[in-house]
Amino acid sequence: MVQKSEDEHRPAPRPRGRPRSFDTEATLAQATLTFWQRGYAATSLDDLSAATGLNRPSLYGAFGDKHALYLQALRLYTEQSNAAIAHALAGRPLRDGLLRVYELALQLYYPADAAARGCLLIGTAATEAPRDEAIRQALDEALRGFTAAFEARLLRAENEGELPAGSDAALLGQLASAVLHSMALRARAGEAREALAAFAAASVEMLLSRPGTGAR
Image 1: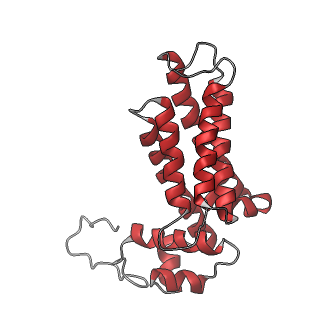
Image 2: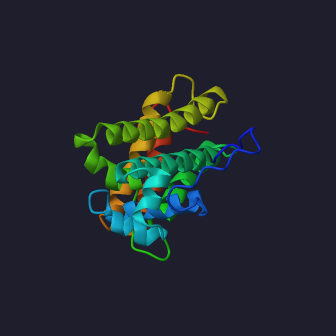
């Protein structure tokens, strides 16, 4: 947004390109979905223009080039995922919270009106990470954040008596996060949702029944 000048008589600067009259968040969401469906490399600026309804100059003016737009899409996805995981784990018994996280993931990976798409990070960023430092860093930070959320909840479970003292919350957090990544990859590969739901439920039971970590 352009700040108002203190000089009422100074003429307003002429806008460059298309005025910012569109919904930036909705536009970014459409771009995110396009990257999610097609992958980063296979998504062209024409694809993004068609999905968002904006021409190239408008996209550049609002988000920068394709690479910058993709990084913003990853950031949006990560922020929304972090919020969903935190909300699912809060205010519920540990087992219920873990199951809720995985159920939300399945809802995301298997949209009702489209083919299974898995996770944006695992499905698209993982393939670009080896040759793109910025994408690799965004992916690493996102995955570490998911693991940290699980670890924090597991540590609270130990402190509150849901898990026995001495449980390795850091290791269990990594395992809980790994279940999520496996589900994302297998959904992208076309595995049936029912099979992954069963896998998630079994994984929770295994996580909570490891020696020394039996949840109440």
